Image (cartoon, rainbow, N blue to C red; front, side, top):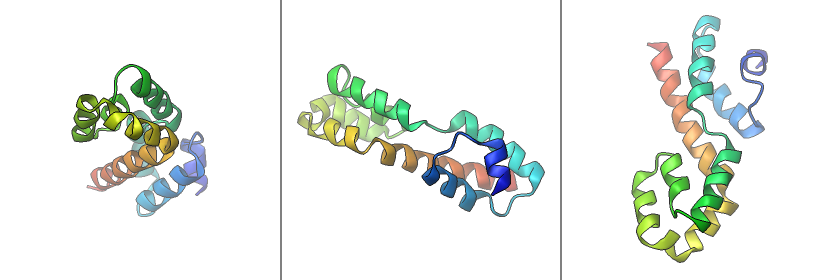
Length: 115
């Protein structure tokens, strides 16, 4: 727990729990490597919110492309954010989009580092 705060102090509470579950089995050296990789690959919820605002007004679906949901991004692009309703829902749920992406990345990095 202390090492998470030491290496990744910028994490929110929900993201802290995600990282804690993914790194419980890692040694200190492995965790340091994990934290370096995770810091680069994670998506900040504030950036997802910014992409959602851009998606609502300029380029529908950019927030979905940003969190590697390419299929949904294409769908939003061709349906104007599912008639703007999907884009508005994404603005409300931006933290969930970021947490889903970060959970996937945290688990991938955890398995990669352990090998």
